[in-house]
Length: 61
Image (cartoon, rainbow, N blue to C red):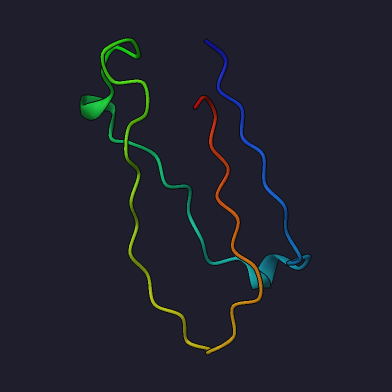
């Protein structure tokens, strides 16, 4: 199965980026028929008050 990633951004300089992908740990990946949508959760804090757009795509349902 090919895994693909898609993202949209307004950050164009390398110095703007401080993030990492949120992926399930390999030991927690199970058969997709018994668990089609693993929950990925990452808590974080924003240093600035403004959040203009949040977008979380999903595949399936």
